[in-house]
Amino acid sequence: KQMLKFTVDCQQPSDDNIIEPKDLEKFFNNRIKVEGKTGNLGDKVSVSREKAKLHVTAEAPFSKRYLKYLSKKYLKMQQ
Image 1 (cartoon, rainbow, N blue to C red):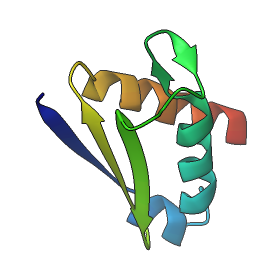
Image 2: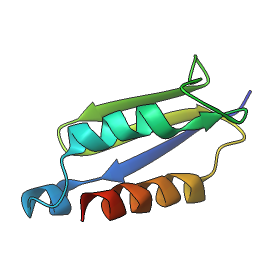
Image 3: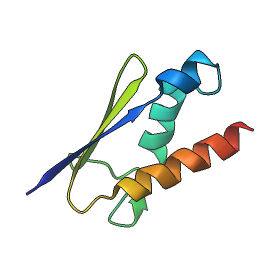
């Protein structure tokens, strides 16, 4: 299987106190859907964090657009 790697760099917004990287990591863990179900990450998707960078490693199919969508949802929630 093809593994896809995505990096979400939260350096700037976390410096400006807009978001907390650890909260975003938790949000991703709770919200990412695998085969139409949330909380079903298993070994297909893993979310890890080092300082202000989030690393999402997923088995294909998984889109960058989906991460972007979830990130925007998180930001909307923060307002």
